Image 1 (cartoon, rainbow over the protein chains, first blue to last red):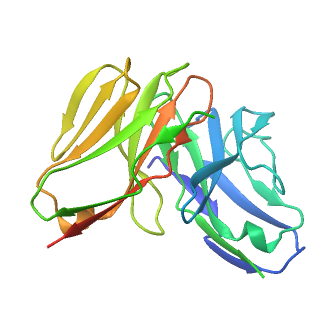
Image 2 (image 1 turned 120 degrees about the vertical axis):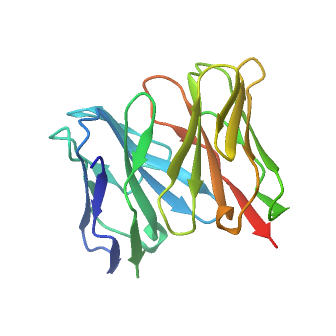
Amino acid sequence: EAQVTQNPRYLITVTGKKLTVTCSQNMNHEYMSWYRQDPGLGLRQIYYSMNVEVTDKGDVPEGYKVSRKEKRNFPLILESPSPNQTSLYFCASRDSYEQYFGPGTRLTVT
Amino acid sequence: GQNIDQPTEMTATEGAIVQINCTYQTSGFNGLFWYQQHAGEAPTFLSYNVLDGLEEKGRFSSFLSRSKGYSYLLLKELQMKDSASYLCASYSGNTPLVFGKGTRLSVIA
């Protein structure tokens, strides 16, 4: 089954404690992206990757890092999380005709 | 990024027809996606338009006018389960999709 998986699905953490949200896709897609979604602001791109070792900033990259060492994996790293990063995060991968989303990670930073 | 504009909220009656409009910048435009998203869940794909005209998929249809930078999603025979947010997104070649803020549709009895 074609899918994008994310882990964890829910996470409550404290300010400054480094965390990683994993993302994996099994469709051999070259393009992968991270979005955050906040009420009234819609889906906003954090980072995207057009292929292995190729990443670029989206609209809201501050406070986030990514890496793309393998085509299937695209982890999102928060080196020092802050409360304003409390949000719903989606990973996605894309071919020419459709973008597939992961189930989402709800992150709360206290 | 490209500006995507769509209404923030709409309300319609069960069994009726509703049209959700979307406008986008035409520079570098390749195609237009529509997604449905229920609260707290991931967006799910509804349609992808590349050429001008109307594409129908059951109760849902999507229209595109490339020259006008305009699209709409048409939902017929509305059901309560259609209450959701509808996201319009443009595709411009080798970049990720750019999403509008979404239209929250409420279907009432």
